[in-house]
Amino acid sequence: MTIYITILVLMAVLAVLNAVVPLPGFNFFVPLFSTFMTTQQAITFITVYFLLTSTILAYVFRTYLRADLLRRLLPASFLGAVLGSLLSSSLNELALTIVVLCFVLYFFQKRLRLGSTRPTHNDENRPKGRTTTVIGVISGFLQGGGFGGGDVRNNYLYAHNLSLQEVRATTAAVGVGIFVVSLSVRAAEGNFTISHAWLYIFLVPIAIASSYLGRHITHKLNAKIQHRIIIGLMATSILLLIAKVVRLA
Image (cartoon, rainbow, N blue to C red; front, side):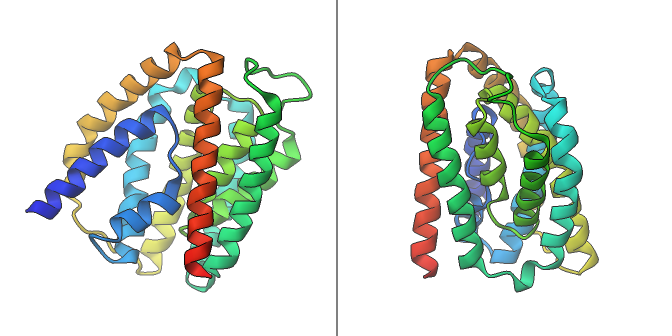
């Protein structure tokens, strides 16, 4: 019984944090929950967890949704997620982690140069159409394969000076599509292994409450504080990726 209480508490805490800022995805959650279950069970469990919380977040933050980016990211992410899910068993974890790290490092230095200016949508800072599509395919592929695709997508949007609310809304909406595809492919291949499913019943009211709390908190943060939070998130993502590379090497 202790293990179930521990998992439930972790899910509740992470739901609140994830409502304010997008956490570093599978690179953080899968190793954490693998201490309670097998890796395949953890991947499925976390995918369902993200599907549930992302659906609620997408609705709560809907007024901040960047529809122009969603139109580019979602179809490309669908394609990437299908490919990643089909090839997940044959992917080289070390090589793909290094790829993700390179992307995040590039976006990190780009965001640093922007400083704490308020988010704008001028030609210089606006994400380019083709680049956004490519990022959608890459992030969807990685996420479908159980890797840190969310790190690539989130940091790409941060690098183009989007606010926390815009990133939260847009990535949540894209994530819903990716997680549905990933679960469907895993189920079709017979890899849909889930445990502790009853815990999701308790997560629903927590996810709803934390989403509204997260929207309220981010609305109160000025541009300078948001910039500092974003830099901290990107730096944390880099450290987690470096630690993973060292562990796998």
